[in-house]
Length: 292
Ligand code: ATR
Image (cartoon, rainbow, N blue to C red; front, side, top):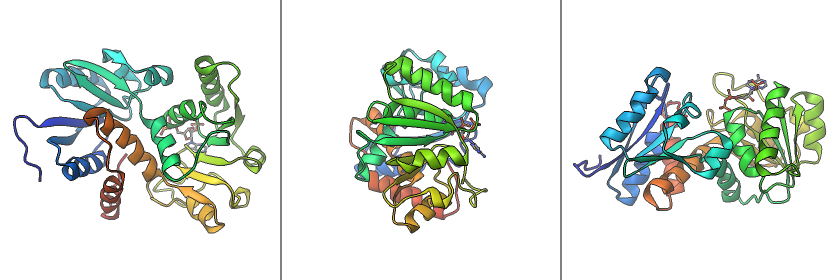
């Protein structure tokens, strides 16, 4: 237990529900490991309480916030400033309270980029296939579009993928090599055939439907990097099947930890202890807890 005093800096996650969030686990483990006088808690905040909660953050001097579902977009209206990435993506998952002014950031995209790099994968010049066009896919796609040679976004609801592609082209330039496609087996097979990296940013394969997979085993290749943002279970069926044929895999826990690490660095100015975070999260998951 940390020695909490009148000077302890308080960080928190707000969302609904956050009862099973892993964020308190990974951040408190890091604060403890580095001997920092910070503590991290979780607040369940319903949509109609969001404005009051943000006013409370200011009045109470809460120092750092993570924002999760369903507030990543709606919180923006209550902030004093947005960093460039958060403005482009239209989503905030991290807030810094700088002398009473709230600054919003998004670390999901950089989390995915750093998870790739940490595993020795450089997305520069690569063809990346991204499954899904929801909130997580938005942040990841915006960041990776700056590095990749080509990005294809496949989504069940095609219009959502098209609108994401258009937003990215508007932000990064019409010449950005990115396109949308319908999520189905025929397109999956064709796009994966010459891809370097496959990212599952849908919820397919997540507990309690862990027997499902977004991609048929026969579409996977040994020289494909397979990255799944689903972290519960830590090894999804997609990752298990990719590993079985010798493909390099990156799990959702890496994504969770690297986005958390980027938030940690915004609040503390220090490099986050990645392995400490991972160990703490795994321990918690093994005890049968779920989180975000
Ligand atoms: P998040 O913020 O975590 O990305 P989300 O915005 O609800 O969550 O997005 C979930 C993604 O998973 C979406 O791309 C969704 O496809 P739709 O846009 O068509 O809803 C995708 N998804 C979820 N279940 C799916 C399924 N059974 N088959 C295909 N896609 C699925």
